[in-house]
Length: 477
Image (cartoon, rainbow, N blue to C red):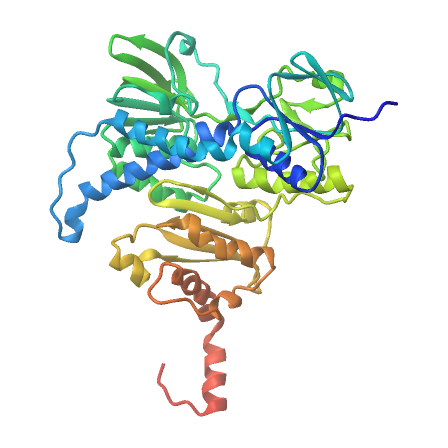
């Protein structure tokens, strides 16, 4: 058998593929990176980078509009959404060189921009070439899932792949989907002057506890967003002014028509698996998802997968983690397993909603004995000084106080959750948070404050009587 040309061949130039290729080259491997479009993937061009730039503009617009809360006078002119999108494009251009073919070639990675398809279990066709490698990595990412809605193919709809390329102001936006992307875009456009409606057959952020997502629903109402939840889209029609969406309840006893100038589909994601020759490669797929083991190997043990295409968590930080797992398994044959518990995430609405570990609903559904403790941001002095008191922190613990999960809906929740991620990964009791000194005044103090709720609960009347008796304390309470 002839020797393989490469140690590692990575298919896909998004976050997972780039981290894998760069890491392998740094470790001394001969690496080929194949991407059919452009390096950078969804995160750079359609996801994290443009969306957070857009959200930042919306936050500033909201700050101007609400300046009176701080004793200031300010006025926001009509927003030129195209100018905002131009700024988003500038941010992408500033980061783009970090993901350029030239940068990766300088690292020692061979880069080919072409489609790839397996022609045998260990051979890949890339353009006019045939590639052999000791190991292959599928990092082809995901794309928007387009639901089967009557009439949808007759209208020009937007997804996260096209929304940041609009050339005109969106006067009224209909968002189909109430997950993270739908919620983030809906609120941002509302704060930048669009009339916005959200349509979903579920609640807002359905994987979160209702008491936490309810905070966002109230904020969306304050932002003027119309919510049509628990309803099904029956059809879409093109109109002179844009589009009409017809929705109904489960019994179809009432039909509601929602009109808008534009429609955004944010109904989930689908793995990019087509055209890769996976059957030929002996790679099994079930329900349109790759079957991978704990080491991120497919059914062909020489082909690994990481990032969105591997799932189950479609986050850039998860893609980076999985890339490290693939490298250790593929290059060094170390039996390292990917982490699938204790994964944090954040929806970057205002307020943000971040979680790690079990939710209260999940604890109930699993029959786990637990305790829940919560504290609103109205109890945090820094939140009060900044006028950011919307939201709360909730932690889930065992009856003995071991942390099981935490959820924060409030200002900078994505930053504040990190303390709980560390505590959960180390198997800590919440007393560790209570005993940790936090700077005053900071938002982070709320992590100690909510942990203190358990300390207060443990001080039962009988324990207090015992303390008073033993130490001769004379207080009446």
